[in-house]
Length: 378
Ligand SMILES: C[S@@+](CC[C@H](N)C(=O)[O-])C[C@H]1O[C@@H](n2cnc3c(N)ncnc32)[C@H](O)[C@@H]1O
Image (cartoon, rainbow, N blue to C red; front, side, top):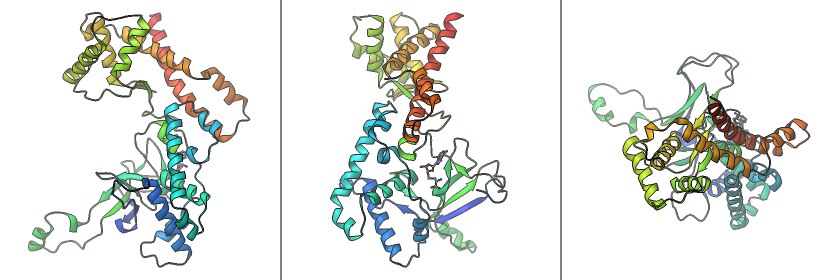
């Protein structure tokens, strides 16, 4: 919370690199996952701090400030509550990470026992790491910046984070030194600074965690954003899927092999629009991924032997709406059932969060179908 008004660009926190907590291991053959490695280091650090270790890096005050519990679905939800999100990809990702948490516990039992750490402590460390790390640099390194890690997420944040390098690390310092005294060296650091509108006194300081879909927020941060322009329902994992759905839904068996049709759509996307990645084609709350609209136009245009620009927009939105209807029908419960369940009340918080997750996916699919109905009635 900003206790006084902060001017645009003003620095709120400056954290030297020696006080950040990052994954130091770059060895790909490491036997633990990144979170397993960092969890062990966090528990070791907490153990040392509890025994009164000297703390030049100020990390003990950071460890003290960490929340006691971060309620992440893959660590703390029951299977029924997790499966209530009705997203197979998210459920299988949760199972994979949960397995890796158990693997860390099993393989590090001895060290954990020496620190009197239990399974609960391992879960705590994992929840802290997954909900507070962000990726820095290339290749990306998982990093927690003490202090900055207190900021909550907003898609319209009033602050941001940057990495500022020390003048020592900046080329040309030696040349400057020959003509004038350089400024005193400052360490490389992370800065939390106010955005262009500044921050008024009493406002919460927020940053953006990044353009993630809801699955990431739900699994790793334990909340589902209300309006997420980056959320996506994948309609087709690739162009092959789209062509296969087209042929089945239209009852078409084409003379041209599907690989050739896929290749010609991919070529049209590449040559006319510079698109080289045609995977995970989906729909966001504000509409179709542009790659999907263009791919569908190319496919339907080629079926009707038309230039894709001569195709009526209704034709491809109707085709895509058919896929949205199919996906909606595959959910175990309908949107109306879900609203009813939510409005009746009496369900636990974990189930409610999973319900919110699936309601937002279904609302996105329904909006696409509604648009199609409106176009039909014109
Ligand atoms: C990096 S920490 C932020 C610090 C957190 N407020 C704290 O004091 O520990 C991320 C956690 O904050 C919470 N959080 C962040 N942004 C949120 C938001 N927009 N809505 C709900 N919870 C949020 C979630 O529990 C998430 O796992």
